[in-house]
Length: 178
Length: 297
Image (cartoon, rainbow over all chains, first blue to last red; front, side, top):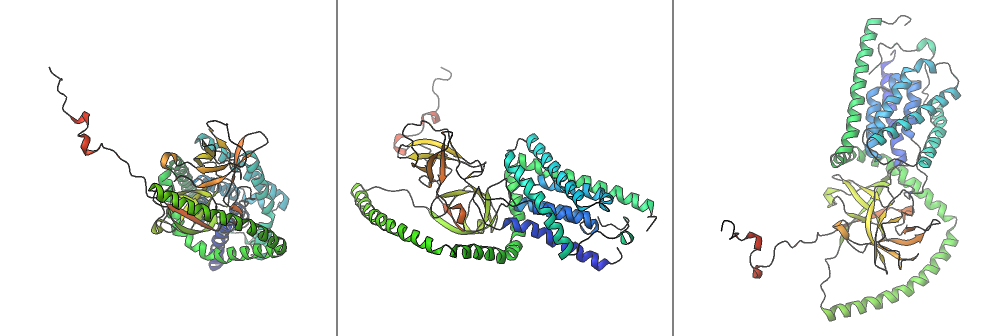
């Protein structure tokens, strides 16, 4: 919170990258049913950002992006949004744990979280009598999403310079924007 | 930094947790509402799409154009083979064109001979596919025409060759097409020439299965599958594809629409069939409308 303009520009950047994460999968290439679907880019962006800079990825922006993604990507309205919100909050809560662990562990954690969120989604679909995606489709979707996570992290780390703050410049929780 | 203000931090954390709870509940509520009252949820969705989509279109336009150019460029590398293929196709087409012209003339003669009144012709609006659904779980796309252009919910969408899908959400300037291959799509069909009736149900593959076939007699691979117009959902006689038989021996449809290169889509506008309710004047009033004479006697 030492540098408010920087903080706001980071939030804007998060919003922009999130919108990109919604927009890129929507490019109308390969509309046939057997075309390879795009991995869940928005999830990887939100996860990577919340782990690195939780204060510039506030809850309301996460909700906004998630609901917008649900509406634009023709998914059941609100379903994946609530899971994305819960997932991002889980990452935020365990933020301290991510400080000093190697990237491989972080990757495994995010992958596990994605699997859990998918299982929860299936559970919610089950209790609301909605049609469920096939196992194979879902499995490959998870594999693809987990596979692009390091790419997203590399993009954030080296190109946008979104990195976890060092110990001494770590922000206080008091000023964390909602 | 070392000792954060405990009380402020605590109150803040409580408030934050409360807001999180409210958000989670309202999102869950939104999901279950969309399961209970899906037309309203669809309207909410189309309102959001209408509101935010133009910005995306503006930002993604160049990217889309670029990726299309790249795909086109890749096709240059096999332009010779393609050229040969097209030549052969053109030769065959010339033959068919001749046959079609002759048949058209013959048809016109016969119609004139019989004084037949045909159904009013379909009109259509053409739109461009601007985005696909992006995820693995639904087969649909957005097109850049909406209520302002006369698109109505439930209309059929075709490309030049065959049925693509159905309009399932209409905004002012955008609408959403559910593809034939989606799990939620089904359409009554008739298989020509045998005239068997069935229903084509999408299952997220490129060859959706044919269900509820009334009899397998006379149905062969290669037969054409057309919409039957039953239930007044779609106009009749829109081509869907050809019958194929999968290794398990079930009938499926190879779709005629070219989903690989889907760029423009026609949305059909049909005038609904007029319903004839009453009897003619000459027969007199309905019997039920007459006073019942013997009630008390």
